[in-house]
Amino acid sequence: MHPARPRSPRDLRRHSPRAAVLTAALIVLLVVSALAAIGIGSAGVPPADTVRYLWAALTGGTITADDVTRYQIVWQIRTPRVLLAVLVGAGLGTVGVAVQSLVRNALADPFVLGISSGGAVGAVAVSTAGALAGFGIYATSIGAFAGAMLATVLVFAIAYARNGTTPLRLVLTGVALSFGFQAVMSVLIYVVPGNEATSTLLFWSMGSFGAATWGVLPAVAAVVVAGSIALHRFGRTLDVLSLGDETAVSMGVDPARHRHVLFAVTAVMTGAMVAASGAIGFAGLVVPHVTRMLVGARHARVLVVAPLLGAVLMVWVDLLARTLVAPRELPLGVLTALIGVPVFLVLMRRRQYVFGGTS
Image (cartoon, rainbow, N blue to C red):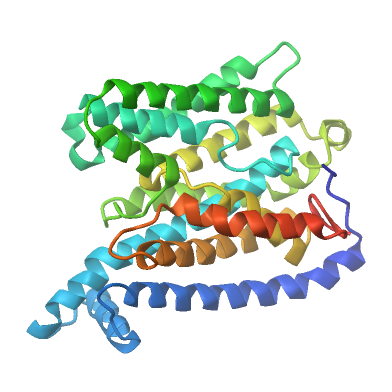
């Protein structure tokens, strides 16, 4: 692991135009990708009809009786799913950037603290025990979010020491608890008869947007957007923390206090995403590295480009997941690993690449 290399003013000027052009290109690509993903599926919808249906839904326009079925497919099924993919992809990219800087570890991702495993335990426990039935269809998601938050509290409580909570202690504690949560899930599957626990575990441990509805989107959107704005406002602090605690103290930044606040933000964001889509690995690991190679290491730029790159990636991964072996659906975690592993290996082979940017 290498710390981020400070940039000179000349470096910043050179990369700023690139970041602006890349941001604009990614916005256009995201819109085009979302429209394509909404129209493509087992029941294909031409792009012109897709736009017409979306316009009718947004403006209260009318459609013919012959268009009702395709309109419902576009607006009620695919649009919420694609929007959830955008939100989760953007959130994973943002949280991945923050976590890697906070723990100064190139292999860290949004689930490094065992949050995803805790969420999966909560979801499986609620599903198999029939708890929180009063919340209806949202019971499992609430259980997943509660499990994720409980996992976060346990990690910080165990990792805390007299000299504070260091990044290394957090990472090691998170990894250890992840294995513990996975063991708990295995026990639940073993003791509960039938295939319900197994299918629930597959969903929450590998990820899927199949449960996306318009009712799920507002809460996820609020958490992801608010958390992303908060992390962006802490961009300069993340720049300093990525240089190490001693350097941060010398520059007037309290590493422990800021780390606790930033980890709380990333934990809530991760918990909300896990509650909506399950745990999707590798996206939050690879997207930050690719972004730093494209625009440098300054978080003011990285935290703008990474969400867009993550959103585009997740839209296309979800499209592949539901079309490659249709009518069956592949778990998202399988595809993100198949894409992420070779990309990550290529990045590591580049001699000029170091953690935090390019040299």
